[in-house]
Image (cartoon, rainbow, N blue to C red; front, side, top):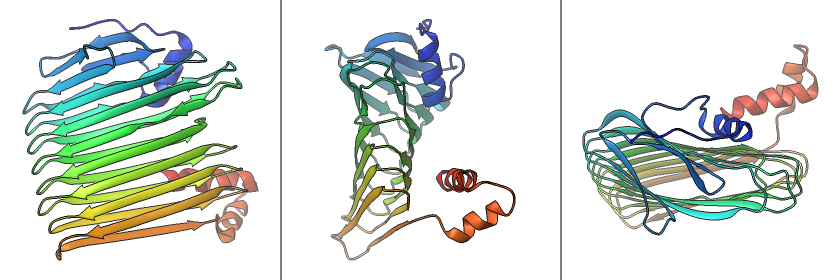
Length: 311
């Protein structure tokens, strides 16, 4: 099924920010704007169906599907919208796909706007997924831009998933909850990139259970807290079998920012190998001086260091 995408100029700008899309993508997609369907396309291997109760969509990817993508961006450009959407992904055996999500809110009004997206992934044996999720906020209204994503991942034997989570600008409040359960030989890699400013608050919670022999997880967060913003990184990896797990939080703190890192490990098997790391600190003075001797101002040097750190 193919359909046109109906977006205004503000919504197109937000889509470009959260999904790197400047035109309608090839492959399967589902565009959502201000709580309504704005366009959908399916392929022979990827089907997208609205849930009967209207609360979200089901995405079904046929076994053996290779080199295809699914884009499911959400944009909100009206003040006062509040919604919770449930999207379920059924990824067939031995498939290899890219899934691009993301939400952008442009709020120029006085009321808060909120989108809570709950994504559940069911990966069959040998399935491979690269999942990209970007959050973005803009608009000069008094109303807040609120995003509370929830992610659940259920991985069968030998499946793998790379999750790239990014929130760099404009989101006033977010609480991210990610849960994952891995069977034998499954592999999960999480790369989180986060920057807060003003009085923003961002909480990231990860709960990963390694339940099968040879399962592995690598959860890494890089973040910058500026102005009076607050961040909390709370990651727990539980090893219930011979497995390997690693969690890392590396943060730059600036101005009057606050950061709380809570990495934790639980081993329930003698052959569970688990490691955690956490580091919080300010930008090193010698880094600033080195760049300033090349002609940059202090603020320009800070920006360059931050951009490199968050790449």
